[in-house]
Image (tube, rainbow, N blue to C red; front, top):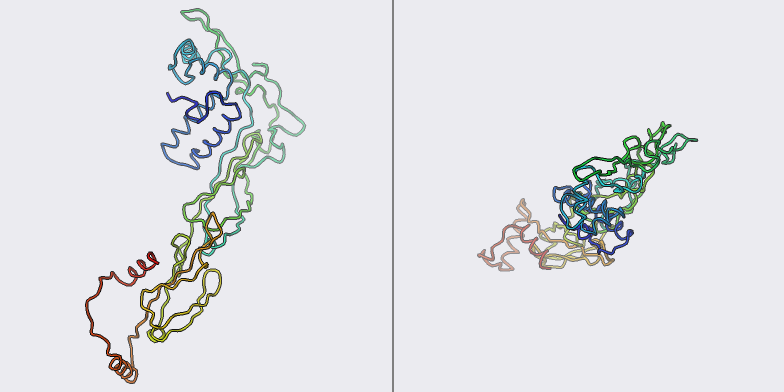
Length: 368
């Protein structure tokens, strides 16, 4: 059995607040809605059990004395107490206070689809989220307006009932949650008709979110306290946004840089020219030098993506694709032939192996 302090990552003299903070941090990471998978689910169970033991002063005292609080393990007299728990459902005083109806709400997950242009500077979204919200009728009290919970007449508000069990070693006093009030110590004779005594209802609400620049597919953004409200008006869980960036027809992403391919006519490649292209954040003037080659990469500084953590934008890198004409009339062909004779173009020869234009452009992009 793993040590409960090690499971929560706290020292043995940790305060109740430190234990609570450690549990909430691990619960947010391992909750099945946020981190699906068998390994995370098993760790979540261990973390929850460790918190249940260490957050209860009596159980923590018994555990520190050598009891396991989770089975027959443990050394010393504390182990015998756990054996009694296993047979009789808990020793006297195992639960010294009633359960609270207020619990933390679950985390919520929303998937958000962005365009590549949204990633350049960030985007604002108003998201419709279906979650549990505070009941406006009872404001989380779970009772009809004008009424209140009443003390349980079975356990008298303790949330537990004790009974004596006769055993071979004598009478053993056990304590178990009261079945009349479910361990709360109070009952609600007049539950709220709107939320049926839950203190919360399902509803659609709008959450305004500023999504930072530089996000990418698969990234999850955490919005603390924006998840579901807990039972009986308990604190809200967290809201997680899972980002998906849609593919773009013209541009692609390489880290903080934006990549594109520019078709250039043969004559413009020979003579050079200027062009205005429409980038994701507006028009860009691009100078194409004379004699540019197919596969050359033209870099425009600072017109890429703003990183998630930082303010130095990446670059816009444009790969040149020289377009060779496929249809020539007689006059055009004669001009090209005359040009070839004048320039004394070399005969075709073997050169470095290339796997096509896009492979060449890809290597150029990587090496710039």
